[in-house]
Length: 212
Image (cartoon, rainbow, N blue to C red; front, side):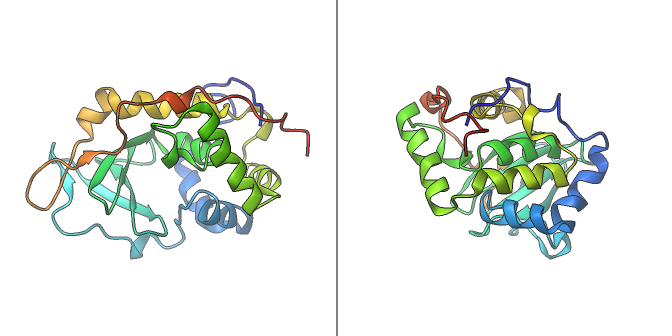
């Protein structure tokens, strides 16, 4: 799945990021793609609530706005609108930043919905994961493109898988990781969401995205 090398959050980003989150729950094509392929359900934000004791070390607000099928949480950090960092909190006791705002999160989920499996995998292994996604849902790329357009994004200028994963790696081990440190029930930091092995970032391009 070859793509342009646009940087996440630049070309193709929604013109009104403050209106993006409601669209993740208000369009059938978007809900279908994100809930199934990306395992992100934002259809009922009021029903999302973190487990007691989960909080940021900084004391800033941690606001859940979506969840995965496993019960893992997508959360905003601090006060404000959709410009806030996004932290993923796993029920396995792991947490870390995955995007600076929903536009980055959306692009990551669109181009690499298997992002949770990236760290520690070789390019060949990560390509196998991507291929498994397409075996389970042969029209994955078509669904992704329809979801992107419903969100006001041009599929042709979305970032490449490698660019989106590189951004994820940058956030997971940069200043954002320190600012978004999550504590658990006993006040101890949760484990980092990802380790330091990001060999999977060097993913080899798949078939050109126009070759169906």
